[in-house]
Amino acid sequence: MRLLRGPGGAGAGAGYVAALGGFDGIHLGHRALIARTRELARAGNLASMVISFEPLPKEYFSPDHPPARLTNLRERWRLLEQDGPDAFWVLRFNERLRLLRAAEFAQLLARGRVRQIVVGHDFRAGFGGEATVDWFRNEGARHGLAIDVLPPVMDAGLRIGSGAIRTALDARSFDVAARLLGRRYTMRGRVVPGDRLGRQFGFPTANIRLARRRAPIDGIFAVRVRGVGAGVASIGTRPTVGGQVPLLEVHVFDFAGDLYGRELEVEFVAWLRDTLHFANVDAMIGQMHRDAAGARAMLAQN
Image (cartoon, rainbow, N blue to C red; front, top):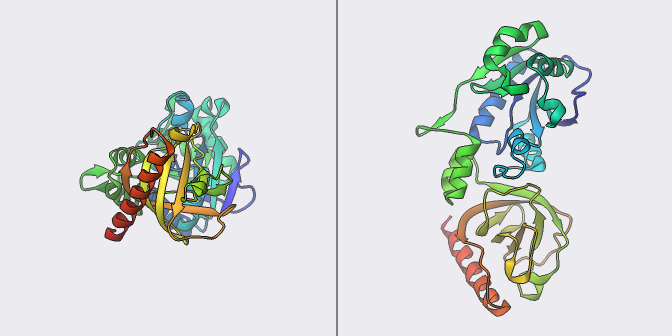
């Protein structure tokens, strides 16, 4: 899968059928869009593409109170690689893009050799949300763009969407989130050097930057790290030791290797507790031992 950045688009080639949207989380609704895109691309002898934005529009419009971000750019890219679109085109959402009228937005897509778009029924883009499904149905052909619209994807009467998944994660309903995602919720990133406090306490951790303004979860969790092992993880600022920046810290049970620089995917199995401020380090270490025992028991059940 090719990663394309900026307004230049895809360059030469026969053209693309493109799924268009935020794609935060790459959930089952997104996968339905991608599957339809690939189907139409094969039928039309075209390539398949996913088009998304960075930052996500809702983040841009609410800089002080952004919605929780399910997936950062790296996570979306890696998840999309598994679905197999031929290209992932990331458009920078800024004031220039925000102000594009519907026709200008359609022209941007056409210059990127997009021949058909696949969207959800409530899709909106362009200045003031002018580029709606109805607009593309009425005006898309004059810009060389066909449109295919998918109805909502439902699960037990619940519309599958990023908002529903955020709600499930906020309620610590990891099984519900997994059902809507089609997989357990994960975070991914490269392990960066830390202050090695965990090692001093007997709990060495792999530190991963969250790479988002606001995470959908925080606290202590039972986790599995793909290709490495099971463990216990923390998302928070580490208030007892004066931390300021939220981090994902993972202690992998019975692991003695070097993880620095590796890209890890952390799968969240169960929530254990909230982040706490302890009176002293000894109290914190005692709780860490209890957390590890609780995570081992929870993982054994799952």
